[in-house]
Length: 468
Ligand code: GLN
Image 1: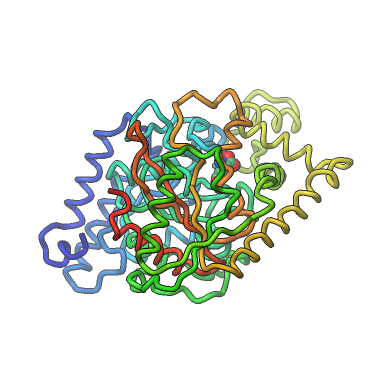
Image 2 (image 1 turned 120 degrees about the horizontal axis):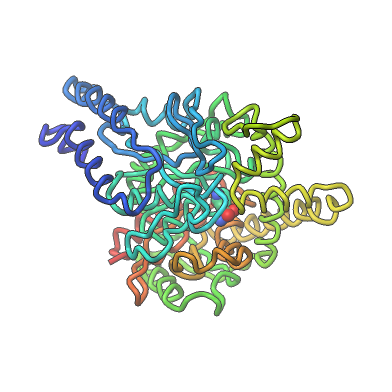
């Protein structure tokens, strides 16, 4: 696209109109909460002028959608919640200003599970997002709107957030590339907090190369986020064609059990063959604490959420209940009216695991198990350069299928939450379809700050025609 822009065969202004019309045509997918038509048109004019002058930025002409959990100055920031329905952000997230400074065009803000809590997008206060491969199915969550925007060509790339799989899982279910960087690789400034020790901004794209290009723009230390890491950012896109010869890829045996849909295991076998053809070696490894990952994640994330969401009190942000007679009534009514059922469930679970008398039994224990899970990865990476796993145990499920059973919904996160607990980078790559035409995703996991190896391996599979 950038080449045809340089050759003057198209313009950003034309591209913006094309994407806006596809957004309107596919509104039944419910992927967008706010379409930024005017902002996109103004930016398109600006970038067209820069292209003419020969000084356009790295992402000139890229049409990008962002999850509605990222702050954009002067725009709505709902987090998929009634409590922030009319909240306007007073500032830009660092990732947003880095995109716009690189001449990307932000086309809109995407639908999501309320406060990023969910795996199906059915927890949005603004209705579920639908899977473009079959509208009766979920697109995954919580960044479902961003995944679908990219899958249905309503954006060239998108940003999401991944606390326990919310970029990788919807990427797998919707057939796009979804990348969660190392914890600390991308600044969280302007990313509304769900669970601060797990949250990381991630990228959706239609190719590994596009994901690499966006990542190199948004990554890097930021004075506004003290957990952002002062680690140099490689030029990922230029490093993609690297040889995979001699790489050792681990297959964690706990992730390849009989509980996984057979077509997903078959995709793993195909990937294995392609990696071997490229000169890599595959070997079985073990992540022995995998069975505790879901319990640990749902204690840590709810504990942090109960604290992070205390700020929505009817006074500081967003919705304020009417006709109240006391401060306590203001809190209770604003929160009761503003939050949906899943958010309330998480706040209650989190408050419980932190409460005196239960703290040691749940929260402190979960922190210890988190250390064991992190060590599992350190030990596995002493024997290999990357891991290959399924992204999800099954392909997409039907809308409504799991809403009444939160535990079953939580269990579907089994292959994604450990990477957040350990802080390591992971990417989901499209891996063909199942017998019902629903997408399969495979996950490649790398050592902390080694996104390069992960992207090279994914690129290798992609270029070998893996998704055809
Ligand atoms: N599905 C997980 C949850 O509901 C992950 C969410 C996320 O990554 N934001 O918590």
